[in-house]
Image (cartoon, rainbow over all chains, first blue to last red):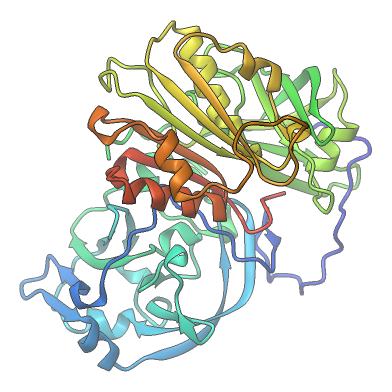
Length: 200
Length: 250
């Protein structure tokens, strides 16, 4: 039984349709920034996106990556720190396109990034039009503090899974915790089931 | 990037509010009596859950303000358009019960040397970003560490400086440097501007001493200061950051 806080009440009336915002989240119009260290800056000339761990790995330069078919999607994003932002617009390359370039049955990936950040994801969550490597936000280059030049976009999971400054995926036979997952955050991170921390 | 062991489930538990202390007109420290607290590290945070009489619930995260080994305390800044912080800073009384779970996080934490040599500690706070850094300084005193420590604290005015009295009594080995960005008391001789590369170069320990830096505050502050440290030659993995959102998380 939760104690009742007398005098505490909802301050902001919900204006979003039911079912739009996961439990425990509030909607913000800002775009807060959360990262564990300084923002890395990688010159586009040195940028590549790689898929490792397949029998024939794949890698794209920035130019090659820009030449891949892209999509512009409008999605809601949900941060584990409890803000949600609705109708965000991104342009990038679908993970379906990228994963099609390699032949692998590995069920998991560990995404790796400039700055040393990693996060783990099931391959099934990256396929089927659910995930992208985005390089534009709202029609412009993604600002560095928001993950530019390119970040993962996996909006159906908490946003720490949408790794900033992503540089590639390492295919894996087993699920291994990434950066925040090692510090006690949930291995999967479904916002609709409030999988914030290990054991949730 | 050494990880800690993945913990078991973090369960909600009922905490009783103990002492309540006003730090500034908008900031209050709440000490919490938690019957089953596993202990925390300096820099970690916890989650709070409030339940209204109609069943409405809100959860928020707050940095832990107390040192490991001390009773749990949080320091909350009231955001006038917030939902939870006005309640915590204006309504909650000693003896009231709220739900908490934690501790959470394991990267933005400081451990006294032994694990990290005698790396001097550089703490850079913007506004209420001082809270987890205060836990580190209290911990440093509590364990009798002689690691040299420097805190640069950027606040809008002297009246908005949190933990003013305590920061003046930290004693040997700790230097506290203020910058007051909007309003300064008469005769103020300290910095009176937003943190900039020149200021960071003046307060930062030389890279050759292998310092460890913790930066906490609003996004603009953290982005600028962390970039300044990297430009001075601080390895990015020696600069740990924690940021608030564009308007702060309520």
